[in-house]
Length: 405
Image (tube, rainbow, N blue to C red; front, side, top):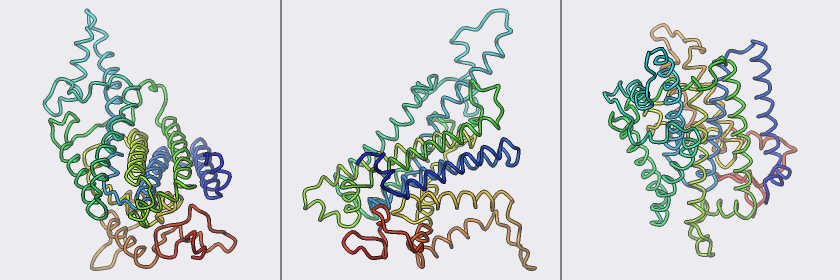
C-alpha cells in the first residue's frame, strides 16, 4: 500500500495532518503578530519533536509489542551528532573573527587548535577527539544522525532478536544499553565534554543576521514537517498485510513464526527504523533546547517516553502524539512557574516539586481505569467507525475477527 493511499484511506491520518498544519500556521501567525513569545514557539517546536519520538515508540511498543526502555538514547545520539557540528562551526566563526586582526594571518592548524581549546578546555583537553572527526561537515554529521543510531539499533536488535529475547528481559536489556551509554557520556574522556554536554546549540552558524524569533519559527516548521512525514511513514508501515504481521508479533509471536513469517527480520526492521526516526527528532529538538547533556540520555527519559505513549493510548499513532503533546505542554506549565502554588496552611504544594508525582499518579490511573488512554476518547464519537489503525493491544481494542469493541 503506497503512502498516498494510506492518507486517502485513513481519516485519522488526514485529521492528524490537518491539526498539525493548523497548529503550525496558527503559531506562526500569532508569533508574527507578537501574541506569543519566542520561548513558547520553541516549546511548541520541541513538543512536535517529542510527538515524533512518541509515535516511533508507539510503533515499536504499541504495535510490535517490544517495550523498549532505551529509545530516548537514540534521541540523544541525534542531538549529540548535530550538536557537534553546531559547536564546531559556531566556535570556528568566533575564533576566526578574533584572530583576523593579527599581523600574521593564522594557519588552519592554529585555528583548529584554538577551536579545540575553546570547546574542550572545560574538560582539560586542547585537541579534537576522534569522535569529532566529521564535525567540520554538516553533511557528514547529518549522515551520522541517521547512521550511528541505525547501526547501534541494528546491532543490538540483531543480537537480541536472534537470541529470541522477549518480554521483560528485552526491556531490561534496552535499559541496560541506555544506562551504559549515559555513564560513558558522563566521563570527561568520552570526547563529548562529560557532564558539561554541548551548549550554545541555539546559535545556528550562517544565520547570524536572524534573530531567535525567526530561527524558532524555522525549527517549528522543520519539526512539523518531520512529524508529518513520520506520521505518514508509520501509518504506511502499520497498514496492510505488513501491519497485520507487526501486530501479530505483539499478539502471538510463536504462531506467526509457525506460519512461516520472518519474525526476527520484521522486528529488526521496526526497531531500527523507529530508532532512526527518534534520532532525527532529537537532532531537531536540541538546537531548539540549546543544550544537551548525558542526563538527557539517562534511562529515566526513556521511561517518560513510555509513560507518554501509555497516557495517550498505545496502538494508536494519534494517541501517542496526543499524550506526548499534552504531557510536554503541561510539564512546561507546571515546572515553568505557570501553575500557581497551593497553600494548605501546614504545607504549600509547589508544582515544580510535585509535577512528577502528578504525572506518576496519572500514569497509574490510566493503566488501571483507562487502558486505551486519551486516544480511547475518540471511540465515544457515535458516528466513528473502527479503522485498521485503531486495533490496539489492550482489552476492548478493535479486532479484525470480532469487529466489536
